[in-house]
Image 1 (cartoon, rainbow, N blue to C red):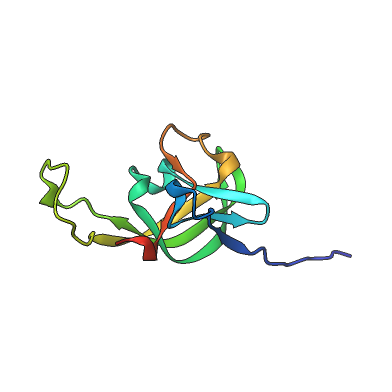
Image 2: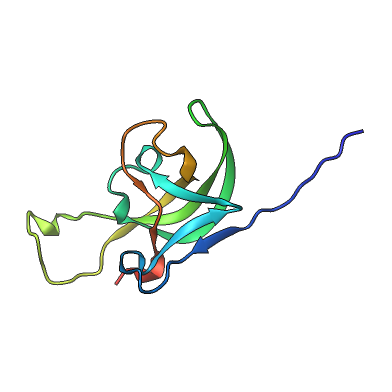
Length: 130
């Protein structure tokens, strides 16, 4: 006789205390006891230009270096670095141009095992772009 269990583990968007200035307007993703992070390997360079905009879903993946893990896939956006900067350090504020991008989060304990590159736990939430 075999017993099969199916259950759902909630994915939570964790926020830092408002006095933690560096994390204001950002969230971290938690599933069960695990915190997740963005890694350059899956999401490209300049992770600070990414924002979480929609739903987050767990996805089981088998990775040759990380083994079998639950990754999180999320609807997001990437701020486009348009030509309007043309080497300038400052300019009059403009609403950033963005394009949709699927974001991949891995369990924090797995980061740095596939390649060198950026990693980020705290990610902008869509409504924080000004």
